[in-house]
Image 1 (cartoon, rainbow, N blue to C red):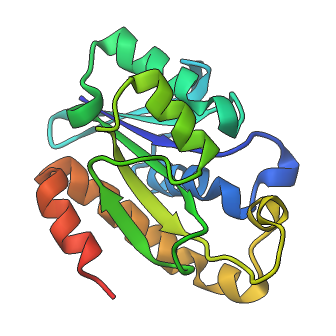
Image 2 (image 1 turned 90 degrees about the vertical axis):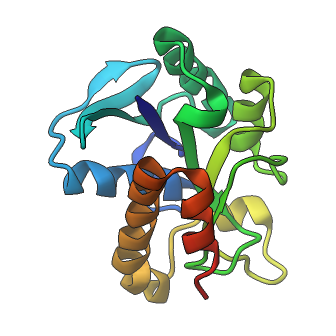
Length: 188
């Protein structure tokens, strides 16, 4: 079993904000897998999908970004899963150019409050994460930038970005972190 947790914030004002890139990726996977209506579980909207005989739990934590770790931990503990091998966290990263994807098996939160919460609850830096580049506007307040909506140009590229991110998640599920990192991180 695997958990794919997309980080974001609930509420209509955040739906297409850069900070909700993780939620958008999960939404894309839900559509791709035809998962239907979510259930409320683990302080999240949750969907279950069976892919190649393996159960996938897709989560959109409803705890707001800064408490995301609590929701993910509820699911990890309930199913007695390994943070290192069974969890993939998907979230926005303003340090990456828009559209760039990076998969890592371990590391710090890099200033991202949602990932900081996840790592704190996990008690380890060994948590796989797919970072979705949302870029940074020069001179712009970081909070305003990530909570802001994608620009028209970014929105036009969003379907391709979400397709690539969903492909990356599927690759992680089928091939494991090392092979997926080699393929995803090698792309320009």
